[in-house]
Image (cartoon, rainbow, N blue to C red; front, side):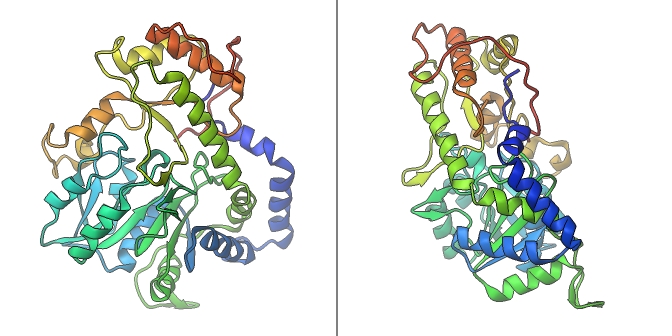
Amino acid sequence: MIPVSDTKRGYLALREELDAAVRRVLDRSWFVLGAEGEAFEAEFAAYLGVEHCVGVANGTDAIELALRALDIGPGDEVIVPALTAAFSALAVSRAGATPVFADVDPVTAGLDPASVAARIGPRTRALLPVHLYGGAADLEALGVLAADHDLALVEDAAQAHGARYAGRRVGSFGQVSCFSFYPSKNLGAYGDGGAIATDDPALAARLRRLRNGGQAGRYEHVELGANSRLDELQAAILRVKLARLDAANAARRAQAARYDAALADTGLTLPRALPGAEHVYHLYAVRVPATRGGGRDALAAHLRERGVGTQIHYPTPVHRQPAYADLGPAPGALPEAEAWAAEELSLPLFPELTPDEQGRAIAAIREWAGGNAEPPAGTSAGTPRGNKRRNAE
C-alpha cells in the first residue's frame, strides 16, 4: 500500500546523521534542559525570524502554556476554527478558557475572518488561527481584528513549519506561536515534542518558568507550572531535520504541483494557498463532492483496491465532538467546516514519495474520475508494492 506518509523513509534518508546525533546525547548523558535543547531553540528561532523559542513536550502543551503565559484562563474565550485537530480546542479548555468555534474559508480551510468578527464578544481574549494542512491562515485580516479589539493573536502552526505569508515565516506574526513536532509533521521528532515562539522577552521568560513546574530557581515554585520540556534526544533529532526542512518542503511543493497538473480536470477541489502565501503541504487535502462518483468514501475505496492509501482529516468538526456538545453551535451553523469534514481526503504526499508511486496514485484517481489522460511527464503507472503507512496524524 502506498502510504499517506512514511516516517521510516525519512529516517533512512538521514540515518547516519540522526544516529550520530542520538549517540552524541547518549555520550553526554544529559537528557533534559541541556545543550541540545538550547541549540535547537536558538536555531529554530533564527529560522522563524523571532527572538525566542521555548521547547515543550508537545503541541497541545504549547498552546495551553502560551495562553497561560498571556493570563488567559477561566472566564475568558478564545476563538478557534471548527475544522482542525481537536487538540487545538482541548488546549484552550486545559488552560481554563472556553473555545468559541468559528467557520473556515471554503477554499483554504483557514479560519474565516468574517465568521470570527461575528463571534467576538466581551469575554473574547484571543484568536487562535490554525495554519491547516500547511497553508497560512489569513493573518492580515485576523491581525486587524485582533488589533482593533485588543486581542492576542496566537498562531497554531503545528502543520506549517516553514510556510510563509507575505514573505515571512508563519509563527512570526502573533504575540506567540505554537508548534508540534509529532513524527509525521514537516519538522517531526521521533516522539512527542513542541515549541513556542515569541519576540517578547518577558513572555519567553515566563514560558520557560511555566514549562518547568513554575520554578524561578531550583525548588522555588513561584507559580503553578507544568512538567512540559522538550528532551535532549528529540532536540538533537530536530536539529538534524531542521537543516533540511526547506529542501523537504520544496519536495512537497513539487509533488503538489504534479498533483495539481494531473488532477485539474477530475472534479476534485484541489488545495489552494492565499495570494502571497507559500504552502508547505503537510497534507495534500482534496475535496470530493458527494455528487461525484459516490463521493469521498467511493474514491477512498477505489484507491485502496489499487494499493493507494488515503486518510481523512478531519471527519468530525470540533464543534460536533461529544466533548464539546455543551458548547454547540447547532449542526449547520458552521457550514463550511462541516462541508470540509464531509468531503476532505488526504492523498499520499511526503518528501520520499517516489514518482512511480505518485504516478500510480494519479492514474487510479483519473480512472475513478473517468478521465483518459496520461499521467504527466515524470510519473508512470506501475504495480502496487507493499508499504506500510506510518504515523499519519
